[in-house]
Image (tube, rainbow, N blue to C red; front, side, top):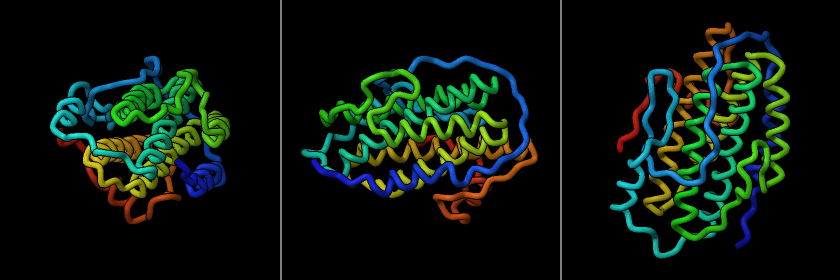
Length: 240
């Protein structure tokens, strides 16, 4: 199976170029949970926009959606990519939560943990080799993610505003990738829809924090119109 990740890698490597330097701040602390490798879920947000893929929902849904007879090389590559992309979000948020003592990061990192697991459910379903070989924070199979993890943590450690901007950037990039990873397999499409819903809610949460800090965010990966529509909308609940 040969798939080119050049577009993704270029987008990821350029993330650090758009992070603006701003003033620092503080928030309250919380703890995170260890990374897990499987889950059964459906997206469900709280009032702060934290959107885990909740237990039982996905299992119930997938039980009514037969697996495709075969998975395309593009779908397999997309699932491998998103498995580590969601781990990147989890790892960066957990690390920045420890740096700043912020509930936003620690809570969203736990939600991202369930997103990692949701993709893992599909890897298991289609017997695709899991790129995650360690739950250790900052450890990835794809060196692009290793490099980006270091860059994003370094940037987000400079100030609380830059940390929240890093969060917005990650969700911005995830939304772009998910919109391009269109799948005709119903089960994969269901999971991608749930992941994108979560990213929209998490973007709203990070933008809300930026506004509270007197800062703003300009999207780099999705369009300004798409970003404005997300921010104007309310926190979403999954359909399952």
